[in-house]
Image (cartoon, rainbow, N blue to C red; front, side):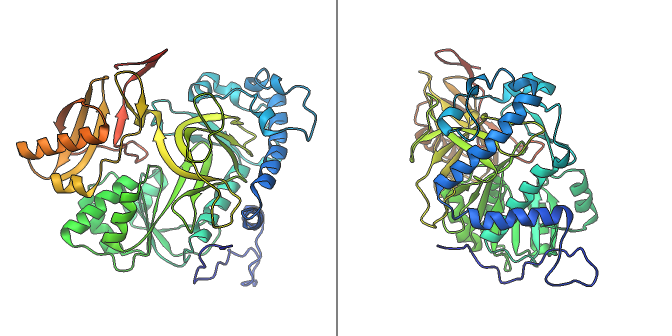
Length: 470
């Protein structure tokens, strides 16, 4: 069994006691996080059945707390009445109705616990960016923050990151991060450890400015969104720009495909390590250190992938992602349909018992809707074929009706009629239907407040029995 990539640099936490430099002795939240990490280092190798049984034990605790202290769940959990302690199974658990983002919004404060366990620590707030058009807000605790930190450490350990290295982060910035970027000051990039500097830059700045800054920093690791990475790679390939010290790119928040991985290796000679997360629940899955697919973080979440009938998907099938956060006792999220779709994978050859997601495909609004109401995932638009067809910098498809799709294009120069015809033919082939395509030229396609960018956005309204034009 592969233990993951070995880091050439020592992993030493910050010590809490004067005079004790090594081995470090930690206390407080850092010690608790390291205790979780110690368990994660072992549990990743356990059989899936063992992990599943332990998930049910933890869910029993979560459900009992929710039934007693959360108004939203008092009627919702009646289907489990009479299930004795220790007898909960996944089949019984699936009696609980699935809840969506609209349910969270409608429930409001009724979804929050009236009595959060005191030892779970200070509560905070997590807000989604609302890329589905339905932003949600949930409360978090110090415990949920500990799990986030432990899983973040797991990601760096899996991929053998040298903690003394320099990291550059180009992403959406909060107030504190924006101030660091403005003053040019770095931060540590892993809580509770001595690390090299992490420099930050605002992803909403032009790609040319980003690249100039990136070349100046010349980091060993880069953290950014996939769509932004693609733009940087294209500019580097066009201008012959290199990043000689770069070892790996880490990506987050958006969908990634094989063409981007190939492009990153071709242009910069480095791999991509991706994460799948959400503001409401933290890390959902991390890319395997040995393969491009993802391991569900089973110690933190129960992840179900369900078909249209609400049944679990078999390996190779695509379904709706439904999450249960095992440790949030402030705003329990039990069978929460987050709005994403994923493909279930086979057990991983690496030997980890953590379940596998072969691909994360995006959200319902990222699917094309055909006139008969059927939906499908469009084939990737970005390809060497596209780059050869026209000098396109950014592209976004917006489906406004069942027969028309607006194609927003940010281009290097005005396109010729022949180039437009070539793009139209390429897009229709990838869409799989003779839609009416309306090209709209813009200087730039803006990102969301959180820095996200979507290639395809559907504005088709769902109705009973199919879909209608929005």
